[in-house]
Length: 134
Image (cartoon, rainbow, N blue to C red):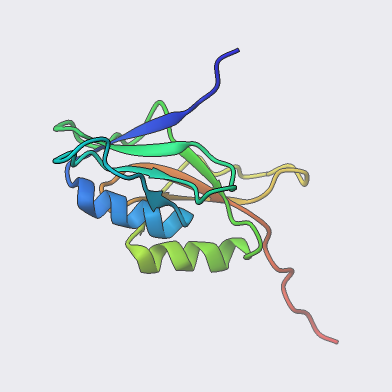
């Protein structure tokens, strides 16, 4: 059975995109395949799960509604903490008109962001309950 070994993101600035995604995911740059190889491929640290991500140079603009996008999980952080961290790294908020108006209680909340290249991605996670009167 086939499995995803690598995803390729269309970017206009591979160094900028590589720096963002390495910091966002904690990935490391794969060593060059040969002298002079400038292809940027990021992969999880040894022993960590996840598919590699390649920065594929593209002249086409990022899509408002991409047919394929990454979904990230906030992990141990709250959704808001992780979104703030990604914004600090260079992500941008997206005015996403398709947020559910009546989300299912079993579905985690999510936020749509764009990387510095404009590629859309989602971040889901838990939110802290609002503090009420005691």
